[in-house]
Length: 174
Image (cartoon, rainbow, N blue to C red; front, side, top):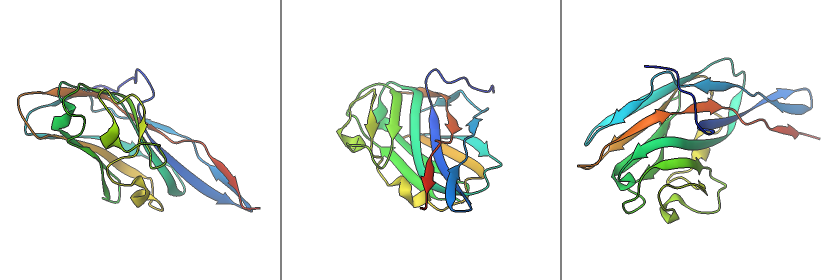
């Protein structure tokens, strides 16, 4: 396995806010998976992980960016994000009729369209199948897992790369 180099911004974006006096400040760090590429084979599940460390606060927002997943029939795929606490969020399941690939696919609770309204290669922002807000207030430190299940034959694919930069955000309490 090798550390990946995203071709685009492939990410799980975790906004974590740190309270300091009367202002809240965000931490910004980038974490890259070192266990890709991974083959996505028929009727199998793969998991790729990223270890997040040294974030001294809790999660206030999560956005997932799927950049480089090659698959010749995305309708075969179920993709979930699993937090270090074990919370599983289904990002998508059996979507897209029969198209190929995910290319810079942004999954965000605040996106204008649900993922089921998209078409492959899903090059826009979409709401995931389940709300990422389930992850709010969790500790971001630990192993984040992207789990991909290929539910049908005969199409296969490849998870090429993902990383996890946190999105900088600053909020004031007064």
